[in-house]
Image (cartoon, rainbow, N blue to C red; front, side, top):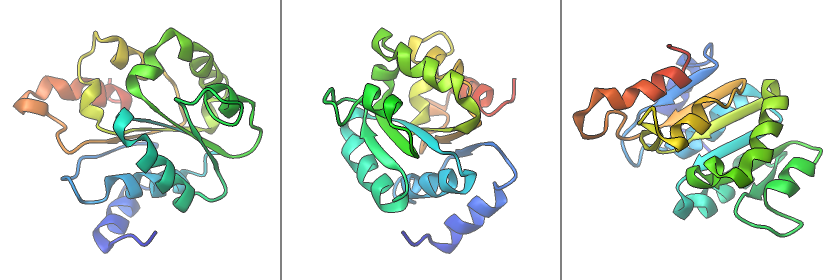
Length: 176
């Protein structure tokens, strides 16, 4: 995937940071840029938390941009896909699932796996404004997940003009 100059320049400017926020307008290529940033981090493991309706799009982008990673759909429960298949696969890999699936008790095994291997994980949080309330289960599940790198994406980082919705993002970027 060929990036535009502004995307390359932005990623180059962020190269020294382990955790980044791409707060770009809709249609500016946040998805492809975040996958490129994950590639630059060189993590063997990638987990993408996305809207359930965009899982297929994310899987296609990962397959195109990270051909050395096997992509898994976190919603599938077949032996070739899903959380268990992702965990058991021994090579470079990427898992795509929704925020609500990630916070579920059924994803506890995944969260423990990430915790155990956190130095080799990059997490992408698409539509990070969805994790804008410090007391929600969804936000707590993501904030408590320690990874080597986090990439947050948002076209509306301060949803509704409420700056307090940026607090969880600040925590995930390491600004406690």
